[in-house]
Picture 1: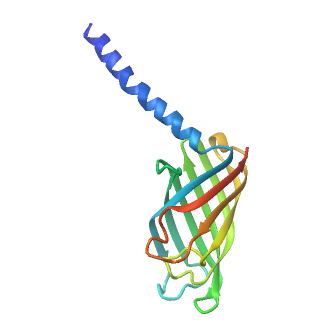
Picture 2 (picture 1 turned 30 degrees about the vertical axis):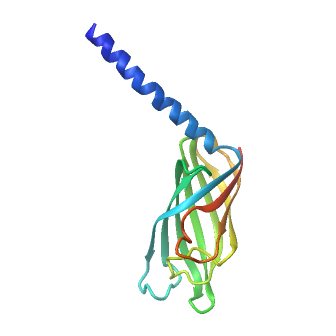
Picture 3 (picture 1 turned 180 degrees about the vertical axis):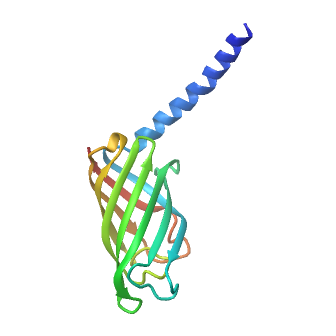
Length: 170
C-alpha cells in the first residue's frame, strides 16, 4: 500500500510538469512567433577592449520570453569582428542558437555595428537586424526562415525586452 501511495504522489507531481512543458513548447514553433529577449550577459573578447579588431568576439546570452513575460528559451550568439574601426563601424559575423523546449534553431548573418567594442549596444538606433535560419534540431530539423530583432533607441533599458519576430518554415 505504501508503494502505491508513493506512485500516486509521484504521478501527481509529474503530470503538471509535463503539461507545463507542453505549454512552453507551443509558444515557440514553426510559423510566426513574436517574442521578447533580454540581455543576461555580453562579453567582449579581444586584445584591446577599447578598439575592436578583426577576430575579436562578443559573446551574448539572451533570455527569451513570450509577450506575457513567460520564459520560453534562450538565445546565445557569438559575433566575430570581420573588420572596420570604432570611427567608421565594424562588420561582424553573428552565429547563434535559439534553444526552445521543442528544439534548437541555428541562425547567422553579417551585421554592421557602429562600434563592436561597445558591449552596451548590439546595433544602431532604430535598426532591425535580420538573421537567417540555417537549420535546427527537434521540431526545427531542416528549418529555414528569418529572425528579426528590433533595436530600439539607446537608453538605460536598451537591452531589456527587445522585440523579436521568428518567421520559421519547417
